[in-house]
Length: 306
Ligand code: HEM
Image (tube, rainbow, N blue to C red):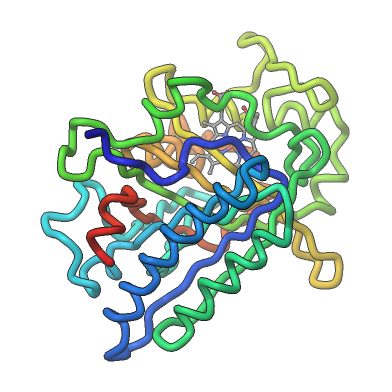
């Protein structure tokens, strides 16, 4: 029977809560995790029955150190490691610790809130929440930079092909590699650019989201460097967030992939540059504050863990 994947290939919803939790040094960690696994299955099943049109789901990812701490099966998923920072001449993709990642989606904020609250109640005795971002759909799916984000994502069956582990790692078939980075944008600098200049940074037109022709698209534009070929794609589900009082306007970058190598190639192009030094200009306006890799097991595996 085909293993049942978590909801990694669904499209971006209107509301999202992202949470990262780290385990404490507590004897309760193992029991709490078992309880959590039961809860994740329960939350997804219950949302499907109670709110079928809300496309609500909660995806749980597990980091490398947590996998070992929880004594989950060995050998580990082939590419599950602690993300190693990528340092370019000017910008660095930093690495940050994350034991568990939750990606909660629904078209109603109340569902997201209740799921986050239920997870927190179970985890609180044995873990601390180190990151929580509430993302929202901004107009017609734009990033806070004002450009439509997600257009060149794989569609149809390609979402599964590029988002879910296949036969290459049979023990973990149906799982997915999850990579996240919280970016804060320098909107003052960004807004000082003309629309034409901003379009050169992204490589697409701003109002109607059309890709520039190859002969005019700058080689240091975001899409020139992030596009690593038609056979190497990822499923992105980025969400913008914004807080005027702290002046934190950002993008929560989130990607699901059948292989982490693809994400790494994109990051190398963006941060180190292609050729070296020709880095992604989006980084002059976007600072990564976190960077963590997780593995998203199938529901069958989560059931075993519980
Ligand atoms: C600073 C945070 C980021 C923002 C605001 C951002 C925004 C965008 C926008 C507006 C597009 C064009 C529309 C689209 O096809 O989605 C795009 C494309 C893309 N981005 Fe990003 N992005 C960010 C970070 C990243 C990172 C870290 C990666 C990879 C590790 C990445 C990978 C891609 C890919 C693969 C495409 C499609 C390229 C193509 O085939 O045309 N992005 N992004």
